[in-house]
Each structure stands twice: as structure tokens, then as C-alpha cells.
Image (cartoon, rainbow, N blue to C red; front, top):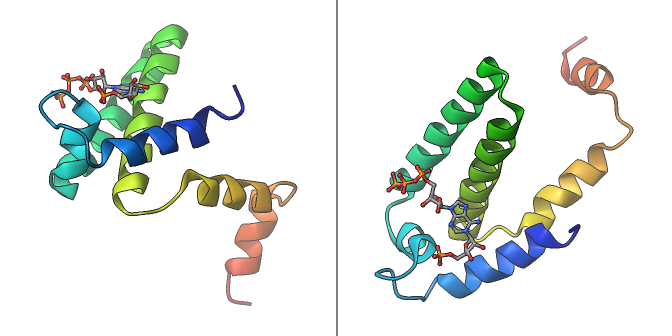
Length: 106
Ligand SMILES: N=c1c2ncn([C@@H]3O[C@H](COP(=O)(O)OP(=O)(O)OP(=O)(O)O)[C@@H](O)[C@H]3O)c2ncn1[C@@H]1O[C@H](COP(=O)(O)O)[C@@H](O)[C@H]1O
């Protein structure tokens, strides 16, 4: 389960040169970045609606859609998901409030 994001990233790499007629992923990867960005905004809106509705199952489903399309954007930009995971790991144990305070000019 923990390896699902890197495995998905590997699959997206393979889809880069796949037939766009038979692969949703290949179609997005080979198309305009704009289309991927629109899908991310659309999925974020669906996450918002599911949360507002208090529909937990739907929230999980839409969050998976949002993560999937974010992964497509990373793949299209040549960024590995391991970079995002490393950034999250780097932040572990650093309070968001302390991090924000360190960014403010004194
Ligand atoms: N994880 C996913 C995944 N999550 C979501 N989706 C697709 O993302 C789309 C979500 O967008 P919407 O709900 O808006 O559906 P839609 O109306 O059909 O989308 P649009 O036509 O508006 O773009 C749906 O078509 C889902 O099927 C995914 N498609 C593929 N994968 C993975 O990618 C692999 C390769 O699939 P292909 O894309 O077929 O190569 C699969 O085996 C899965 O592992």
C-alpha cells in the first residue's frame, strides 16, 4: 500500500508514449497542460462539495481523483512523486506555525 504512489508514477511514465485512443492517462499526458490544470481544479471542487456534504465515502473517492490528476501533472512536468514525499518527510515534526513565523520578516 505504501508503494502505491511510486508505482502509479512508474505507470504514468509508461503511459507517456501509450496510445491516447485507448488510455485516458496517455491522452492527458500528451495533451495541453491547461487540460490537466482544469481537471485538478475540477477535482478540487468535487473534494470541496463532498466535504461540505459530509459524505465521507465520496470524499475519499474525490480525493483519490485529485491526487491522481496531481500525479499526472507531476509526470507531465518531469517531477517524480518521490520529490513530494521527500518534501513532506522534510516537514515532519516542523510545526506549521513555527515554519510560518520563520518566514515572516522580523
Ligand atoms: N488511478 C486512475 C484513475 N483515477 C481516476 N481516473 C479517471 O479519471 C477520470 C476522472 O474524471 P471525471 O470523474 O471528471 O470523469 P470524466 O467525466 O470521464 O472526465 P473528462 O472526460 O471530463 O475529462 C475518470 O475517467 C477516471 O476513470 C483514473 N484513470 C486511471 N487510473 C490509473 O491509471 C491506470 C492507467 O489507466 P489508463 O488511463 O486507461 O491508461 C489505471 O490502471 C489506474 O491505475
